[in-house]
Image (cartoon, rainbow, N blue to C red):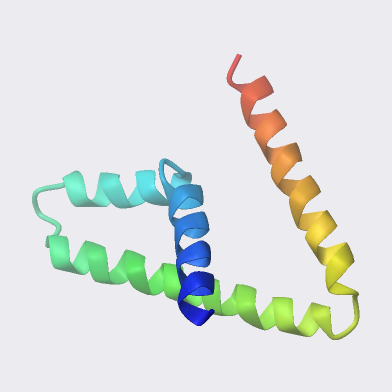
Length: 91
């Protein structure tokens, strides 16, 4: 069960991160010849780990006060709104 959860979360976050501003910033830093690639990787990976830790902490805190059913609805609606905004703003 934990491996299924792990891969579900991994795939969801991986797909969400592809082509986003974070990846573009990392790509730009890596494209500069003077920047050591391992430093770019280590710094960007560390930043993603820290933001994920903040997300887990805040999610745990909020779930103590708000029913997770409502949190799931809010997250789903937020994804839809972001998707619609992305489509509308690209035209």
